Amino acid sequence: MRAAGWLLISMLCAAGTACGDAATPQAAKDAAPVPAPEAETTAPPASATPTLPPGGKVQRVGVWQPPAGLEQVPIWPGAAPDMAGVSWPAESVLTADTPEALAGRTSQAVFDVSVPTMTVFPPKGRNTGAAVIVFPGGGFRILAVTVEGTEICDWITAQGMTCILSKYRVPKTAHHWDPDCRCAVTPKVPRALQDAQRTIRLVRARAKALGVDPDRIGVMGFSAGGYLAVQTSNVFAPAYAPVDAIDRISSRPDFAVVFYPGHLCRRGTTFDPGLHVSKRTSPTFLLQAWDDPVDDLCNSTLYARALDDAGVPSEVHLFAKGGHAFGLRGTGRAVSSWPTLLATWLRERGVLGDTAARR
Image 1 (cartoon, one colour):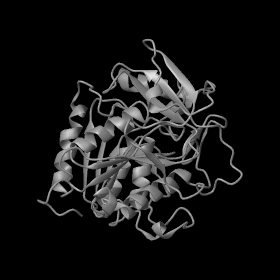
Image 2 (cartoon, rainbow, N blue to C red):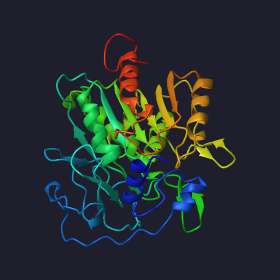
Image 3 (cartoon, helix red, strand yellow):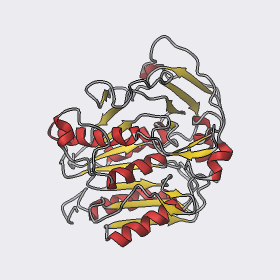
Image 4 (cartoon, helix red, strand yellow):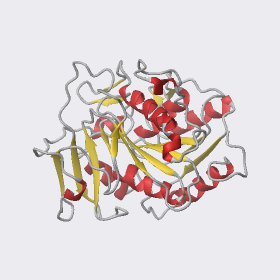
């Protein structure tokens, strides 16, 4: 287990709350109650990130704020679908002291998201016209918005692509481990998938205003977010009743990048029966470490086999060491070479250049 990455996720999941694959025994072992956050009367602005002692953390009620100069916008014109009669605690943000963070010393995770949003990070330097929607992980309990969100967007924009950070609804909004019954649960309403599909449609609808090619919009997901990336790559029927003209636009990503996914490998090492991989499945870059202590490797190997059987253009990387939740943070291992591998794949796909067919 890589200490830094897993320690971070442990802290951001409030001292051991399960944040990985809902179907694994590890998730059951790690499940623990979430401490009550400190109450605040107003949402803390981005400038109010608390100063923490070494190893400290604090959880406060309030809406997560994006980096200074950026704006998060709701993805639904009114209330999100299928929320009638649903009561969740107010959104809160856990901030932890993490010296390994790529900017500053803190990392954040978001709890109890009932108003899903997206935050647009514009490209740095030359705009290639490509865009990537990022789904952070967190076991459909929390959203690890720093290590698997803002830090990732900084890399994406440095490549000349627009990054869209998705703050989708949690908790229990997709297949997850329920510590109360100590069992895996698939909710009747796939709220996280609803938000993911809507975000893709919204970005495509606003492509001109964003300076984005509507045929070069991809998704990138980590852990539970990787499962969302896989779902959107295969589930094209709307997961919700249309609310406006935007919902007539395709939600199929033009490419998908999937890191250490969970929730694909079900009991008995069987592939998620709700997913049907076909030739329409988005071309995929898939990566995981063999020693991942959270999401079993079968999540990647089963999906890789399904992609191959369906003839989907894909690239798969399985590294001996790396653990889980490493993001862009240095591991001192070969797995940290993934940015170069991914950039090469994106160029070969024509996402970052015109030298190859895109699809």
